[in-house]
Length: 276
Image (cartoon, rainbow, N blue to C red; front, side, top):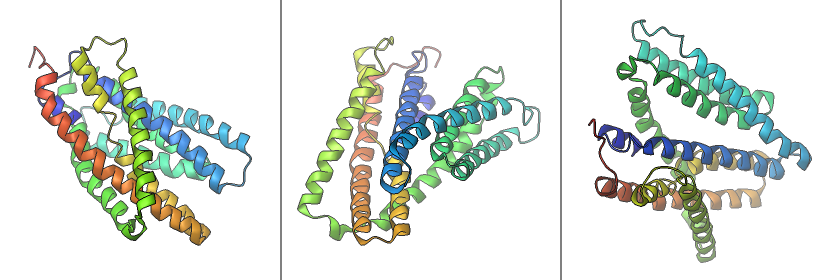
């Protein structure tokens, strides 16, 4: 939807898209840290103090890595090179892949996810300062790739869903968990707008952007399932499949609802840029 706002020239002057992106990125970083901490407590033999410290250290490593790669991408490849946009996109993807693989090798898995986010963020922020930024088509390549990979990610979640586990009690607790999580996401999304120059309708629009959380369950759900499969514990496998059902329900409920609301309300709640 943020790409759609950019195409319609809406919300750029007040930095609405920037607030939405920053809120989402910060949310993802917090979720990554909590995911690593909780899975470490459940599946690791290390003591709790080590696991708590491991998260911030991994984030620091990821931020340093992302800043370094983002700065490097300002000079390599050259903006005058042939197919420079395609090369930059390939290098961002390669840097993200290296971050994920390398972080697991060194024992700090949270560093990989933070490294991916910070690499793209720093590179994009510095590219926008260039006079020839209008010719930058990296976001176009990313959008095309994302449309394909999004389908693959959701398909992998659906492949592991076992609907026979969706009993009345499981469905009730799952909906309660999703409702509580949605309330917290909406609350913190609204808090992120405080101090900005947005009007109340634009603040509510940014708040709605915090509702969907499709890629987090799509990415982390299968990871937990693989951890349980490696331990070969029947009870853990049952719980992991139950979690996958809840992840699928989360995607099916929040993603279409938020997309529909944001698409329909954008023309009425967000002003077009004066330069559009």
